[in-house]
Picture 1 (cartoon, rainbow, N blue to C red):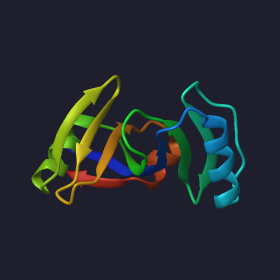
Picture 2 (picture 1 turned 90 degrees about the horizontal axis):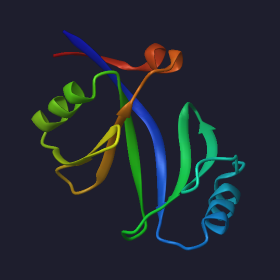
Picture 3 (picture 1 turned 60 degrees about the horizontal axis):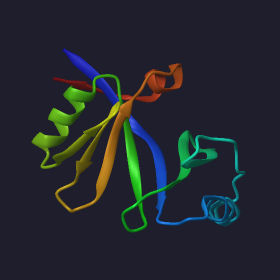
Length: 123
């Protein structure tokens, strides 16, 4: 059995009460445009196929990556064999922690662009 995964997003976590200001700063800093998004997110579009967004969080501000996969449990298992650990399952994604301490999320990959550019892994 095989599954696919690829780097999908750069997420800028901001512990802030002013998401609009945070989104405006990061859009200007990265040369991107603010686009309408969900209540806790500011969509800044894509750079080289990598989605960039700003979100409000309760923890300290940081940046995290999203990895898209067509089979989330298979990708979680693959990454656990590499030393990552599962932190939590939230709605439709899984939060992981690398052996080096960085948090990242495994999200569902569905688009044609995902399928065309994803790595293929043998389970």
